[in-house]
Length: 226
Length: 226
DNA sequence: ATTGAGCTATCAGCCTGTCTGATAGCTAAG
DNA sequence: CTTAGCTATCAGACAGGCTGATAGCTCAAT
Image 1 (tube, rainbow over the protein chains, first blue to last red):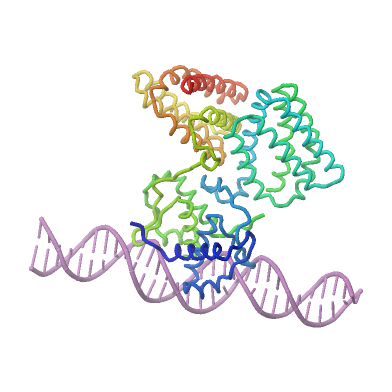
Image 2: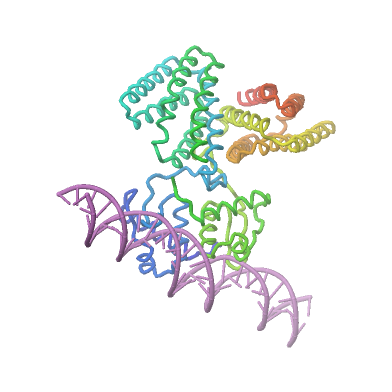
């Protein structure tokens, strides 16, 4: 029989409040002081309850601003691996993603239909056009769409799911799109090489192109971390 | 970039402690007071960190008794990918694990200390002896230990965590150890090749040996599924 | 009128001291 | 040998104070 702790009750109350008020993601909740009065609990108890909701990805507590409903629920892949400082593991995550993506490319070369390559080419056209008009948000989207097309062409659901999880986690800890301009700029040629090699069903060339692509990204991440 | 709070660092420290000490589920951790001294943080901060780990199912904090490592840690990797029939995805998981492990081997060749290779050689000796006396349970254990040694030598915690998750999931859906006898028998030579290539810091040879190793395993899994 | 610097109110992060309640082990009385 | 009670140790909860981050305001310089 599990004991019921006050801090858990607090978490339940706040969670119920969000549901009752139908608060949208990003909405602001009452402040710590108000909750202390409302629930008649001490500060630390309240904060423990909040921490629980935070760990569950339901709310975000921001220093100097307030308490907010979470924008998007994270997969918490890293958390379940016992890793809490995502920033310190950016490079490691990149290495993992590199391995997964290389495998996806290999499988895509072997199994993908011709139509899949046409879709990739379309995304690459978007990429080129967006880059020409310096719309870096669109570049980012086209890039993501291109890579997603590769993953899906590989026909391995587990692999696709994992790569996406890694991508989401990376994205969360990489919130300045400015950093990516130069990366996108430098890596476009490699994208074209990659697609061409895949269409030729040339495994070695495809992997080599991907390797060049990763090299550019890795460089900028290393610069960012240091 | 997300702000880093002390309580989150605390959670990371404690979870790192569990990993470092290799604490088994149910094991008791140092008390609140000891952690306060050790980490030099206040009680409320420490308790928030503990609450986070509690929410993640890593520890259990029991009033009047202490802090303990959680008994059951469910990873639910596949479930969170929306995959419910693990057996139907055995081959896909194998492909993913293959990609991850190849990366681990590559990193180990580049970064591992000599002592790590000695540990691997030790596990391989156990492997050989167990095989000689036809103790297939011990063979299985030695094999697992050998591979684990590789992962840990690669120095990438995210990678190690993911591989272990994959291994756990695979193991759950692979319930007849009898099927593995012939696999182990056929793949021993490849293990030796792999280790030798790694010691020579020969990336290509190591990957080739691993490829042969995977080939044998894959064959038997395919036979099993069909 | 616009901009910018500085002040101020509000917020969460973190710390300390204190008390309560739960648990387990010891001890002494029956 | 059993058991009731004492005690040490632990976490749970609380109040209040300090720090640092944030945002909005005021007011002076342009």
